Image (cartoon, rainbow, N blue to C red; front, side, top):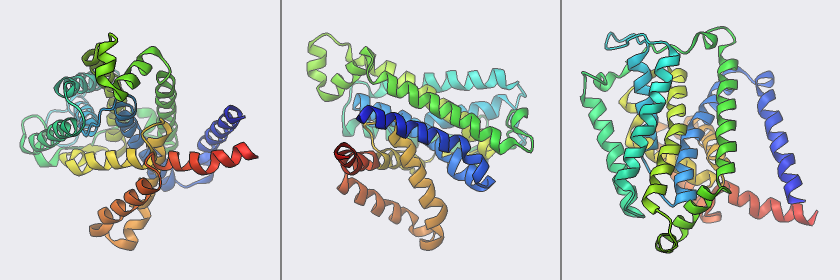
Length: 322
């Protein structure tokens, strides 16, 4: 019964998302559709590290930002700095390779740590990259970053927002499906064993460090894809897009949605973007972070597993009774 209801929920959600361009305007489609799913992809990488491996990382926005910078440097931009004009079929794979490599390096730096030490190391990496990008003009063009980055031609038409939405939706759906599938594979089960008891997992023969390397490399692909989509969405990339505050926002999105299921990051991203889009007019930009903190505390106090956990506590028992 529960399995059938899950299928029904997934089918209904898929139908609603596919039909969304027909019933909403371009603003809602872009800001609440495409942008939320891009943030959800980065949060999904964070969720997989935390939920599957017990690795709380604040560096996935840095991985996404590095991919975005790679696209800006190798492709075209309007700043007059770099912009080698390489086609997308060259610079996009290059950006993904850079993202996976950097995510693996981050994993190597944090592989032998746990808990707060992992958080501090990844936070330090995120902060170091932010300041390096802001102060380096020869490669990252400093504070200004890069602007005038063009999306592929098929996205630069009058149907561009709709096509871009469907592109993001397809990639987000694929990432969600892969993340869900991995949870029950031998690798996913091994990572969950490491999450629950690292010493015991090591005792039964798992190579803990190698598994953490592999997980960091894998989620780097999701963050890299999100970085490419983000730079196409904004048409620019600068240190302000990859700051420590943004890294914390990604963690908040992950926690609000829930770190035990791949749908959580996307739900958290929608909630975050809704608050950012509409509530900021009510409370003001200077009080927005306070509002997010209050919402975060209320959700976590009500359900440590975020909105997904709250849904399961309220809806699933009622569905079972019905």
